Image (cartoon, rainbow, N blue to C red; front, side, top):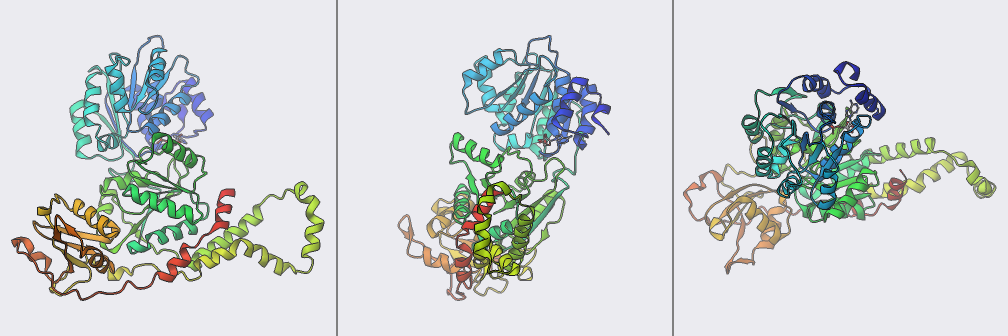
Amino acid sequence: MTFNELGLSSDILKAVSEIGFETPSEIQEKSIPVLLGDDRDYIGLAQTGTGKTAAFGLPMIEQIDTDYRAIQALVLCPTRELCLQIAKELKAYSKYSKGIKVVAVYGGANISEQIRDIKKGANIIVGTPGRTIDLINRKALNFDSVSKLVLDEADEMLNMGFKEDIDEILKSTPPFKNTWLFSATMPKEVEKIASNYMENPFKVTVGTKNSSAKNIDHRFCLVHGRDKYYALRRFIDYAPGMFGITFTRTRREAKEVAEKLMNDGYNADALHGDLSQAQRDTVMNKFRKKNLQVLVATDVAARGIDVDDVTHVFHYDLPDDIESYTHRSGRTARAGKSGVSIALISPAKSSRIRLVEKQIGKKLELIKVPSGNDICGIQLMNLIQNVKEVEVNEKGIAPFVAQIHENLTDFSKEELIEKFVSVEFNRFLKSYAKAGDINVDPSKVKKGKDRERTSSGRPSANRVFINVGKMDGFENKGQLLGFVCNQSGINGDSVGKIDLFDSFSFMGVDEGIGEKLINAMNGKNIENRDIRVEFSNEKPRGERGGRRRSGGNSGGGRRNSGGGSRRRSEGGGNRNFKERRKRR
Ligand code: AMP
């Protein structure tokens, strides 16, 4: 099918062809004829990257009456980023449609300028909920004439707590309008909005419900928490030319991972909620221009990142809210391209893979973290390819050629090749010289249950008892985990199932972590009570009676083996690769 067959006007077709869209995407093909012709509500289940902006934008522009000076269309979206992006696209689509005026309203920017722009005769408003409400209250926005209302990324808006704002904005729009709702997933809250505010909506689904785009390869590897950073680095090094986002669960982790990557010579930066809007914009601009190879971001900060050509999404941790997995991985494989999503999973968290699989309706493929040898091979071939393809500036080097020949005259062709390759490659080889296998053997991870449970009642190196619980003020497992991580310095990712009782708790932990916890926590106190951590020797299932446990012996204390030399060699700088990345 072509755009000409969708019923669009010549002005729009001219703009679309100038932008470079050749054929309509699936959602455009399915939605545009309906949205142009039928006066009805609509639900589009589609990810970002499927072309949904044009799917609603083109028919919306077509239906604006430019002789009538009033706001006729409102697009609500969750973030400033997305707001700017949508407004930009709508302006491009309406390049030849006279009288269309699109204004973006979003927080963190000068409100007076936005009011001025609205007054100049806006007929399409693209807004984030908070700023839109603000402008309604200031009487700068009047939606009495709105006939098209778009709720874009409805699930994200609800996730971000905009439910009440949306309700309020919807109340300020007239009942006769059409509501067009787009969402990547369809949780209950979104269904509620649909049933409360929409009448017999026309539904279009691209891909499966609650699933991610088809052209994403979903993979995961099994590594201990302590090896995650090295796994990430190896995946990055194994994919020369990769351009990706690494998602972390916490701001602290985003900062730490980005800093480590920068120290190791990668073009990386962090995007998280501790940054000011101006700092976030700077990071995003660098990423958009591909001056960054890896963006390390928290879920909230990364909402609405719509950058094309992202090749990889890494999940440093799986998100607490599994639905976010779909949003995360949807940052790659945009506009019909393909992409890879790789989750770095510690054994204690392996049972969460099934939740992801349920969410996306697909199996995740277990892959191995590449070995040092694999990486060196790939990088070497990439280097050779670059040498083959590099354009020689003959004029520029002409004055030096004689001198170069004179200096290198004693070397054979073979020797020269080896030497030139080694200039770039030696440090890299060194970096991975002692790199061991960091994959966890999947057969050692028990399926179906959290692996720390002991059925025999014998002490388990993977399960610890701690004599603090709800009575110490911990209302939920997350609070206890936060406390333990803060006090001991362990990574929350090394902790699996937590059982929180009134006066004590149990925690499943990765190998080596139990000892660390015992060493770090014993001797500390909470509200003048000594904290006691021990390896558990009890059957976890029988705990409901609320008996006070005594922890038993602290046997099973296995030393945290391996990793030391590997860590040193892998952690070593990689400066010349930084240079090369910059040049790319
Ligand atoms: P969206 O899902 O609207 O954020 O679109 C994702 C990307 O796909 C944007 O960069 C669009 O410009 C691009 N795009 C949208 N429709 C098409 C199309 N029919 N052909 C090629 N690219 C498109």
